Length: 438
Image 1 (tube, rainbow, N blue to C red):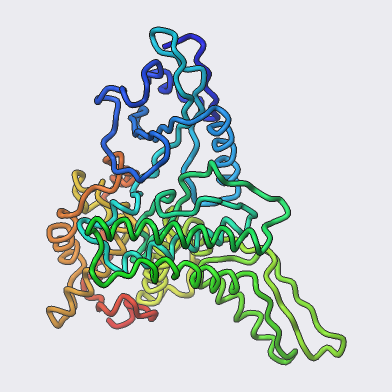
Image 2: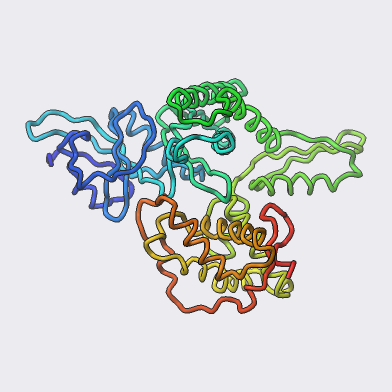
């Protein structure tokens, strides 16, 4: 490795020095490269082992690498879902002193996949729609903080499973720009049109390769991001007027936003000169309402939909065992120790790279409900766990990059609530407490 190598990194990971920076990226040895699926990129991108983690390395120009590195750090501070920047490597030279391209290093997002890797053979319309809906949510969050992406596409996004839906994460920010004063309607519409055209092209490419279901319409799916984006943007930022006697609609608006997973940091409320009409408008909206509540109560860091599902189970646990009057944090700790952790510990170590723990728990609840539907009676939780592991989880591909997630730390022997087996199973889409039907 050349002594003139320049590494810009906020992480100061000494393992960076062990990578073969004196070789062109395409010539890196196989024992360094991690075999992971990757999306389409205009640059050469390789995955490599870095200590206990895996990183994505992209060859680009020094200016673009540094710009993207700083932009990703800024987006992280704004709590935007995106990959974590690790370092910028410049002044690379080979053994003959020839200059090599600078690279941007980002940490690979565990349990995430590019859109092409989320389906085994053919892309179904419902899967494509969920991917586009997730991208619409990400685009709205970016626009709220004033970020113009400039290259919105499925290829520039990573997806993680999130309790029946997907959560989207920005991967490529080299064309993006942050505007402190926010975006104009024209800028937002430009980004939206870029998204619509790029998604249509990506899906048409899959169609030409015979990798989409016959009933999938690429143009209709791509147009769906426009409808999904505008509906969410209006709900989050639009103003609403009503009679002064209908002040309950203020709480209703807040509850609707909470149900979508967003918190309001500030709400503008104005009345007209006569005092008969009230106008409200959210001014600052912060995503992750359920994530923050679950993290505060249990310490679990999950996706938004996963958090909603786990919180529903926690609330049902409180109601079923007569603990609604007890301190919420105390009951949450009990639920974590007696319900969630025993299920996670039941997963064999060789299968823990399949899905993240919160997704396993969500899928287990659904699996148990389907078992009960087929059997015509309630299924004990232990039986459902065994069935799920053997008939579902064992046959999934790994979606983690490092086998052995943090659940390995759960080693204490904790008894599961004795009467959990008698809990009735109901439709997972039912908003009512599924533990109430004992």
